Image (cartoon, rainbow, N blue to C red; front, side):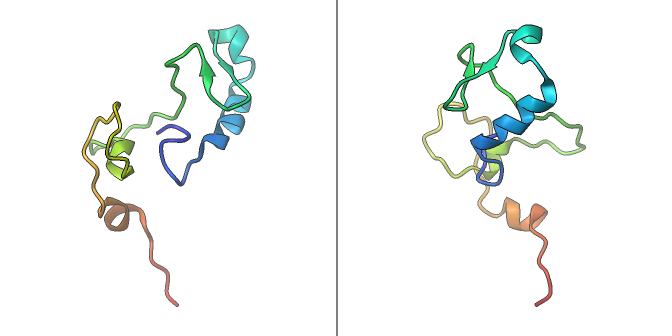
Length: 88
């Protein structure tokens, strides 16, 4: 999962993610620009985690013309798996 890939994790979350990693320019040669993109170009940040199910954040993203799409959009997936309804 990457900041900016989903509405629930906006690109602005690059800032706290990078602060956890320390001096990324020195350690791995990656820096965050003022517009919250990374250099070098095509660098990706995010969190990888183990799961027993296959998952790509693309499954939750409705952007139809995404050149990097790795899985089809599932409009009901969030409701089925991640949304917890509360009693009113």
